[in-house]
Image (tube, rainbow, N blue to C red):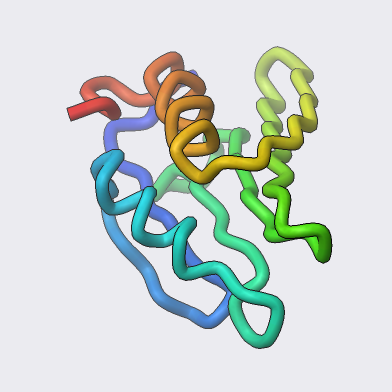
Length: 102
């Protein structure tokens, strides 16, 4: 199921509605090991069962957890470059959100 609107929320409470790839890159680059260890992207309405969570690991790699309840999809990817994370996240979002790449 697709959503029209989605948001990204960071561990430290910052929220961006319908973030662009550039905004996602900024949020990912701001992850740290103290008070902002992860960010989640999810639909802005109840009943749409997908989300992606990006975490900063102790080894400085990024772990992305993709969940989609509609297809019972669950995937974990580990990437070392933030631009690769943005690319993977943007491609995944494009399948769930119209105009997510714009």
